Length: 79
Image 1 (cartoon, rainbow, N blue to C red):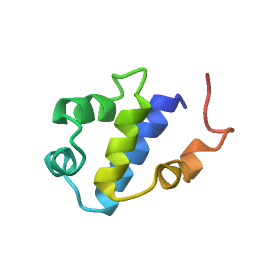
Image 2: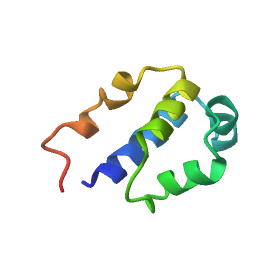
Image 3: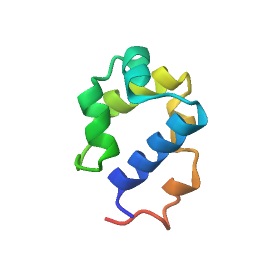
């Protein structure tokens, strides 16, 4: 799977786990709702690290925790 797909899935899973909607994540992270929507729709080929960092702050997790998921196993990510 492409890295942007893995990030979108992880974001969606965290939102479900924490019962957070896009608007709530926007308010907590400061990342525009349109950016969150674009990431979730997998339209975005690249995601800025500072955007991902802000999203993690909205979830109140460290960025290491975001990537600590089987989705990011090197065997699951393709070029």
